[in-house]
Image (tube, rainbow over all chains, first blue to last red; front, side):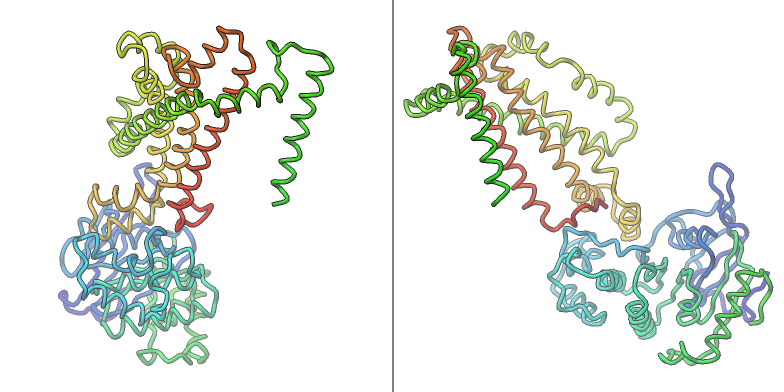
Amino acid sequence: MRQISSLPMMTDITFDFDGVSYAYESGAKILSNVDWRIPEGAFHCLVGRSGCGKTTLLKLAAGLMLPTHGQVRFKGELVKGPSQKVGFVFQTPALLEWLPVLDNVLLPISLQGAVQAQDRKNALELLELVGIADLAKRYPRQLSGGQQSRAALARVLLTSPPALLMDEPFAALDAITREELQDDLLRLVTIRKTTVLFVTHDIAEAVYLGDQVAVMEQGHIPHFVRIDSKNPRSKNFRYENDFAIYCQSIHEAMIQKMPVGM
Amino acid sequence: MRRYITSLILLVSLLLFWETIVRLVGLSALVVPAPSVVLLVLWDGLLVGYLWHHIWVTGIETLLGFILGSSIGFIFGVILGEVDNLRRLIWPYVLATQVVPKLALGPIFIVWFGFGMTSTVVITALICFFPLVENTMTGLQIVASEKRELFRMLGAGRWKTLVYLKIPAGLPTIMAGVRVSIVLALVGAVVGEFIGGSEGLGASIIAAQGMMDTPLMFALFILITLMGVLFYQITILFERWLLRNWSKGEIQ
């Protein structure tokens, strides 16, 4: 099993998977012995086929599930349950349809107590940043899929969590909308220096977004591919030669189970 | 609009058919009264005003029983939906309240609460109880797992998850229970009056039967039906207003 070549200082590690395994009570193994360190401020992507354990790994990082063996640490502390320092973006926007968009964005705060005028202002600014400020008073059913995803993004960013876990958040969107949202996401997490673990089954998405791509198969992560390109990425990166080469090497890693260069 | 006209034409044709049959065959009004006779009795009763009192009594009994039964049902549904152990313990008894023939309980309610409104309201409440328990329990459990996980990530405890997620998310299902409940409430009130009432539309049917006044019985059927439709339509309108922001056909 390959590791990232240079190990950063422990304090700079945001997510640390140390020999993590997960099995159902029935004995079915989902993850076995995953070692992975995600440094602070990094954008790591996890690709793999459906059902290979990507989402399970993400939920272990979130504390929504606990590993059967090994440990998950968040900033050096053992993960024992969900933390509000970690934002989670789901496969669906998971908006509450009975609340207007603005109240949906404010949910992380309204669940903890009274919403202040400043929070409202922050939420509106975030809606501005994700480009749907004019939809603040609308209800989720009045929004397109892309707009709903933007609202979900604004919601998770409201409390400025230092880390984001994202579970194929753009999978259901059309290609153009997805590209727009990818660029918006990159822009926002770069400004905030947010650490991101992004799960996707789309190789191109992983290469475009991540500075490192982990390839998962059947509960293992046999390959890590570092993506060396200008950061923040230019929109042209998608059409560069390097991009295709990265995609190809990851694709081969996924189908041939062959080690790839980093 | 055209739909309504078609329905109206059908209604008028049916009434005409009924009228013709009764007149041609020469059926006695004691057996099947002609619609013209029934409508005349109904019109008289409403004009003279003695029917209004019974409409009022049955209406109040229905509403009181409905409010009492469905609120208790809702609370039970929430508790049973939330506490698994309690559900296993209490569910058989809740089910028993549903399967027991409630009319058979009528006489015992009369012993406990006397003749009159209280017994009828209690029977009505008992009938309205179950649909709300069942639908509330189901409604709370069908919340999409992603939304439940979202609330866990946001640090919401059990109470906040219940109030801000499960109940609103289950509201379409709960309202379906309310719709069933309101219709059953009227049936409960009328039948309750059969057993222990001296006032109301149900009691009036028994009284009319005693006097062999079949046209009055038919007039009362019409009134009860109209009341049921009215209650149901009001519930539908309320539900539409309440759930106006919920996406249609998608329960999450």
